[in-house]
Length: 228
Image 1: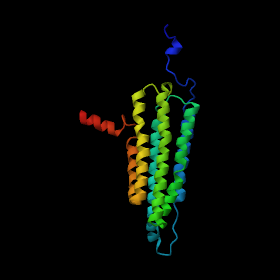
Image 2: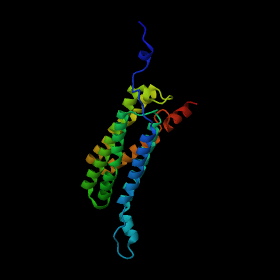
Image 3: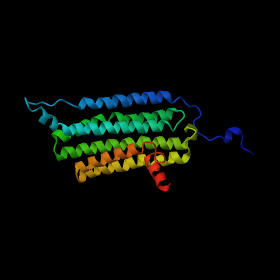
Image 4: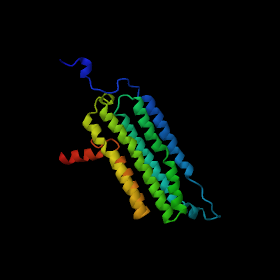
C-alpha cells in the first residue's frame, strides 16, 4: 500500500510563527546589554594633576569593557546569521532563543567582576574572575547547540536554501565553545589567569570569524581560494 500525500511529507512543526517578532525582541535585548556595559566604566578619583595616572590605573577595566563589547557584537552577528537559517519559529524555538538571550544578559556581571579584579584584585581574585567569565561563556554555548540540533530534527523549519549537512556542520561551533571556553577557565585557574583571559579572547575571535557558518564564512572562502 503506497503512502498517501500527507505521509510522504517530512515530519516537523507545521504551524510556524513569523520570525520578525523574535528577531526584533532579540535585537532589543542585544542593544540594551551592549549599552549596559558602559555603566561599569567610572571616572577615577584623582588629585589635581594626576588625572592621566588615574586613568591609566583604570586601563585594565577598559580592556574588560572592550573585550565584552566585541564579544556581544560577535554574538549578535552569530545570532543574526542563525535566524537566516529558519523561515519561521515555534514555541520550542522561542524558548531556545530565550535561553540564548539569558546567556547574553549575564555578560555585564562577569565583565564587572573581571574589571574589578584587573584593577583592584590580586592574582587569586583575577583567577576567580577569569574562571567566572569563561564559565559564563561556556554555558552560553549550550543553547546554541540545542538550536542547531532542533533545526536538524525539524527540516520544515529551515529556510529553503539550508540543507541538512549545513545545519549539522554548525553544531561543531557551540561544541568547540563549550570545550575551549572551559579549557580557558581551567588554564586560568591552574596555570595563569592572564593565559585563561587570552584563551577567551582567542575564542571570541574564532566565533567572529565563523559567524556566517563553517561552510560559508571566511575559512571556507580561504579553502576555496587555495583549491582554485
